[in-house]
Image (cartoon, rainbow, N blue to C red):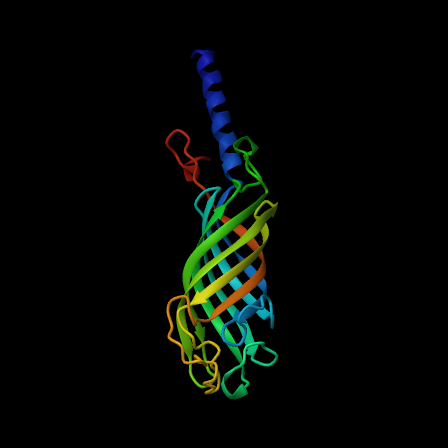
Length: 237
């Protein structure tokens, strides 16, 4: 048989195996955890960012559609507290109130990386570090305290992720949740914080917010398929 045939076949096989090894470094999914702090903004805290920080934690699952776009799901817990003591705005009859609640947060967000995110494929101008923005929807539930509060929310945020090593990612993220209700700060039958001035509500007016500042660690899994001679990675031996 023509030796040229064997050389060409060997060269094609070498390219296929090389591409397979390269593709094996990339993964579709991440799973991990986030830890940090949370704070509330509403009738008992109008504009003091990071006031009354309390612990928060989350588990996350991320699907990396490509180097730029990812979709994340989270199940988070946060402790939120607030107090009218020391506020500049005066409540009716100089009344004072406070609250302390645990919130369960279930949500999903789409993320956009400003740089192509990977520790491989430098010829595609990928970076080990990538700032990103995110936005999404979710549901917040605060049980107990005289009645369970629940509300859908809109989430927006920004963060940065860093590929520490193959399969290991670390990051930091600041997100804000805009609730569609004004009862998060009503706890134990305390009606003062439920629309204390008797003003009408709208989507952006007289509603509660909360925010989380978190650090994250995640682990990659789920190899991407790569095409080689119309076979995926599972067909290459």
